[in-house]
Image (cartoon, rainbow, N blue to C red; front, side, top):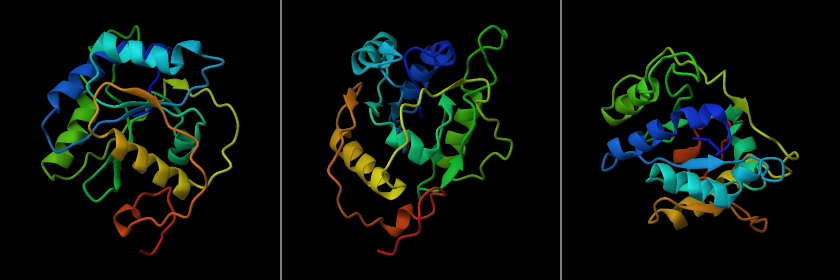
Amino acid sequence: MFICAHCPYVKHIEAGLAALGLDYLGKPVSIVAISSNDATTHPTDAPDGLKRQAETYGFNFPYLYDETQSVARAYKAACTPDFFLFDRDFRLVYRGQFDSSRPGNGVPVTGKDLRAALDAVVEDKPQIVDQRPSMDAISSGWRRPSQRQPLQVFAEFVAELRRLSANSTVACNIPNLSPASYRLPRMYSHIPFLPQVEP
């Protein structure tokens, strides 16, 4: 999921995100949060601010800082919050809202929509068809176009996630890794925004 510290729509569901992490702890799913906002225009979205947010609400999942915004661009993340759910075959099966609650609309924060999607993946059931985007959310604060290809960005991101897999409640930088030649395993080839690459 793409979130940040300053967005009022994220702030509205922070406790719900923490509850989600706790409720799915020990289940065969992994949760990762990413902030891609430009910290020069949104200082609270710098790593120190993200760390405070994670500690304040007890996030038990990795929280990464995408300084170059290349990961967000590869995913075509459009706002915060923005949720992406992949199944066990790494196919994108859900991209929708947390729930119908918005600041000021009086609807309780439950995470109903995302939880239903997660449960469908865990229980190997058909995915929900009515996927409503987080259309009311705040557009991400872009800095500059990415010059790297989605395949390279994704490979770097996966490598960084593997490195961080043993940590919890982390706020760290996704580094600018030097260009390298990556080959994407076939299991990742169903992700819509990535090119098909033979093993």
